[in-house]
Image (cartoon, rainbow, N blue to C red):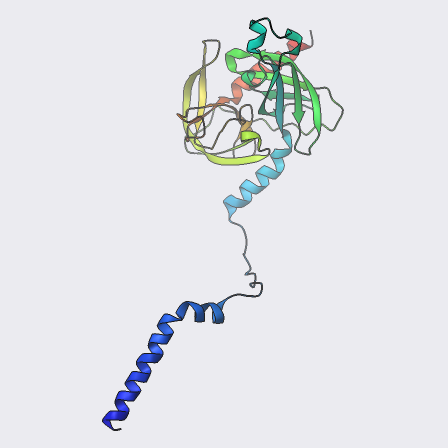
Length: 269
């Protein structure tokens, strides 16, 4: 090959390479774009821990309800004598709860239903049922509301024990954070035997600490073990922002299983 021809070949090769370099995005888009639906790859079996979470949620979530409360709200104009008291505005709050028994008794937090003018329970199936507050235990931040509206009452949640809990074991919280119903979050027991204050000035002892995400609206919902049994009632979080910071608390089920039946018995006297 003559020297002149070799130079022409090298220049031509360089030109081709430069063209490919400059127009690489266009060429790649033209030749490799997926302009038709991609082929779905088979996933294979779900992992054991995924199966546990799925089955637990499917089994327990129908027992979890949203508790909506209407409260009177003082209008500043009332204090100035410019507004009739019977026309005072109302505020609406919401929390979580769970069915305790076939009679339609629902457990939630006392602070969820405090000063309630009316209470509505919304089930996972979408039914909206009227309810009455039949008992409150502020010292434990527990309350019982009873469904009085007509409709199907979900199955009661299974009861476990908090006496044999271990730090590190899995827990599952089901509730309605920020009004987003039927939300599942998971975590572990971070600590046991915590003490937290109540609005009455008394402390609740043996409280469960968890890193499962708990946010406003979760209050009163169930904390479950990996068998789907109730081990606590979510009640509070520690957070500078007011949202989940990985430090949540639940009232131990052994206290719940002692206080709730007493509230129900008192309501029947």
